[in-house]
Amino acid sequence: MNIFEVLKKLGMDKWLWQQEGIIDHGKERKLSGTQPIRAVIAVTIHFFQNTNKEFFDQLVKLTTDGKLNRELDLQFGEVQIQETDTRYRTPRIINDTRTIQLHETFLSYQWCITYAIYTLYVETIDYPKINAEHGKIVNPISPDKIEKAKEVFDYGRFLIRVFDQWDKDLLPNPERYNAADRNYIEQTNILFTEGIKFILCHEVAHAKKHLDNLPDEDCPSCFQEMEYDADNEAIDNILQGANGNKFILELGVVIGILSMIFFRSTTNGTKHPNIEDRLTNALNRMKVNEDSIAWAFACIGLELWDEQFDLKFDWKAKGTITFKDLYFSVIGQIKSK
Ligand SMILES: [Zn+2]
Image 1: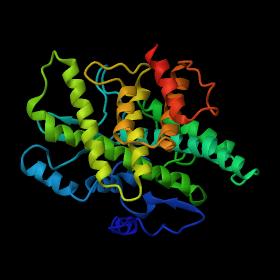
Image 2: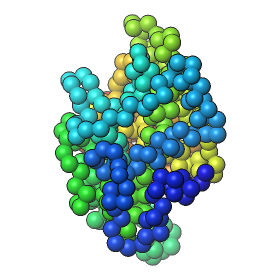
Image 3: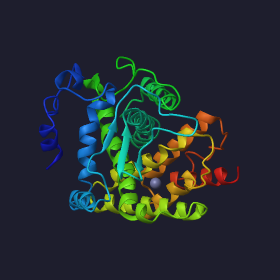
Image 4: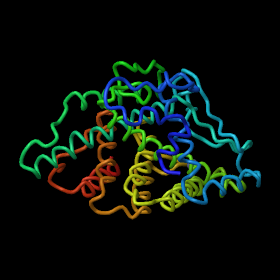
């Protein structure tokens, strides 16, 4: 099935060619959940189940072998991501029931992060570069879009600790938006589905390879190894489904890993590898090109994190070196903190 057939099947094709006015997915069909993210949940799960040609069969086999519960535990509710002092409503697999849990608020958060990174890439890196190449303004920069990107990022990161309604009139969101802005919203939707695909494939890898023989509790490095293994298995499954869109898949993986960084001002893990190490491992595993925009996406994510926690990294080289070099310069600074 191509994207249009998928959308038709999901009843999402009516607005496909709409160029003006308001697009309102909540009005067109009954959606589960109350947060605007509900508009893209079905399509996100569809693309996850079809990560590559054999992936759906792999999922079926895992469920018949008792390694994975066939129901995805999709949780709804207007609550913040933080559940207790130490528990978060982040995607996870429950060891006993082999059920993958995914909460609506986490999905909202992830969409906001994705929108911010994508829009800041377009408005602060891509458009200025195109304009410079042409020696004139081909794509005008929108200060309003940049500001909204920061606002939606702030809304998303606050969801970690405090739940608040997502204002569909004021903030970019996937449910109700002006057709004139659809490009930003819908490109974000694509990157969002890819990011969630990575996160879910990571949990599936745990179900398939790890839950039957979990490492010893007092071996943190064994847990870290298990996490890299799940990342690598997820990446391999995702790249196996590439058909001319590898760069989009790469961006999805980068955003999927970056999603964890905005929870804390440090990246150090005990049972989990440091986030920057997972990111570098993933970029290597995907054999990302020198000039891939994945490096720029990673840098924007790190810069948002720097601003969020006032980490004072040195970004002076930005614009004078490649994003790959900038990425490793910042990683070096994280390491030396
Ligand atoms: Zn894991």
